[in-house]
Image (cartoon, rainbow over all chains, first blue to last red; front, side, top):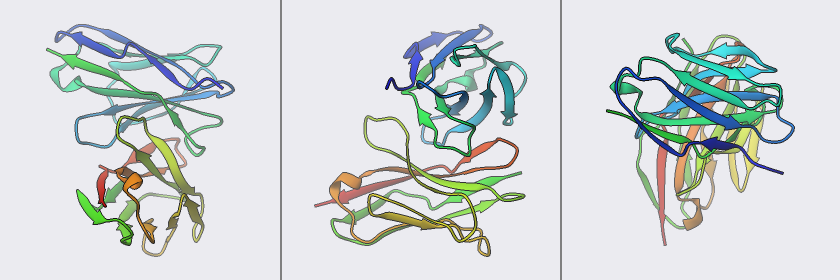
Length: 113
Length: 111
């Protein structure tokens, strides 16, 4: 069974740029959730995708957007990057939503300069 | 809005000591409650969960009971080991498909 993978592992961008992060869900999982984790804090829920549709969203502005593909892999896109977007971005997959056990990837660390 | 508040750390205990990490929540409706753990150098993983009031989740000697009357989900273990050293996160999932983590509690167990 293949676990959740994320790419890239690290990324450096400058303020105002756009970034795309990628996540491959665990085999058999149809739900992907994205989180932002600032240093020393708990993960903050960005949104969830279920069968290619956004199915729940946290308190993040519209410049955070996503996609889920037919194979249930997912992308997180962030436009107009700000310095405060520097964080670890985590992807988690599950079978059936956040009420179920989520399996987390190792994360992508984004630094915005 | 919904939220989770957990005991601030760091917590340092001697091996075989009793552990309690407090967690309280605010939510509308009937959330599911979780404890996730992050061991050094590893990703987040589920430790235990409870989906309705009075349910007890348990795993690896850890337990937590979903108390609706006190809106709490405290994590306990009777005898901690060095291998339990990790960061512990309390979390909830609400009926709106949103998920909220607490800020995490770092536990160090010394021999």
